[in-house]
Amino acid sequence: MTLTAHDRARRIKIILFDVDGVLTDGGIWLLPIPVAAPDGSTTTRMVEVKGYSAHDGLGVKLARLGGMKLGFITKRISETVALRARDLKIEFVYQGQNFKMQAVRDIMQKETVTLDEIAYVGDDVIDLPVMRECGFAVAVANARERVKAEAHYVTPHRGGQGAGRDAIEFILEAKGVLDQCIAACLDEDNPDSLAMDIGMGGN
Image 1 (tube, rainbow, N blue to C red):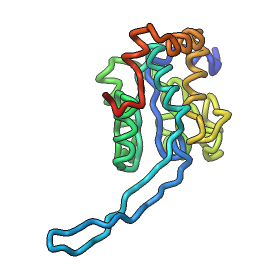
Image 2 (image 1 turned 45 degrees about the vertical axis):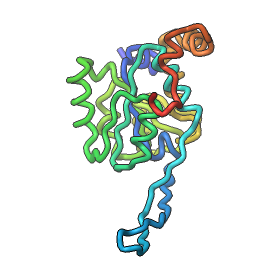
Image 3 (image 1 turned 30 degrees about the vertical axis):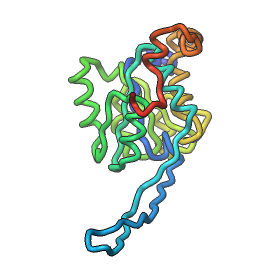
């Protein structure tokens, strides 16, 4: 029997995201920052800057209210990714991953989950090995055509413009809990909502 995208999404317990081109628009800004040396001279250090979507951030909170855990798996190593992960209280953060299935297998062992219970959101060919193995493969609207062709679902929004939120809401809707999660998020008396709040630097 062929499973539909909703069938696959209904089983998901963990959602994993690529970062560049998925949670960002793919742009990488390198800014020169002057740094004072001990001898009084000035050198320049390059600082990497990325832009993230607040819509995706709130989506993370909704996913967590829906009982799911989340992770970032990215090839690049960037302090901005670490900061964003801490801000959103992301459970799994793997940087410098040339072969992303290695990180997925590590998560599976730690969490005792199967591939069918993992969703992955990607945009480029480096994401295909995971997308081909996981239970629910999502491509963002700006993904390479080869990646879209192998996805179970393509988001209506582009990376960095709410694509992560699209994936989260699709999964929550398939589970039949999206409205419940939104209501819990908006309930100021709900202790779970307060405990899972984001945007506070991980505090």
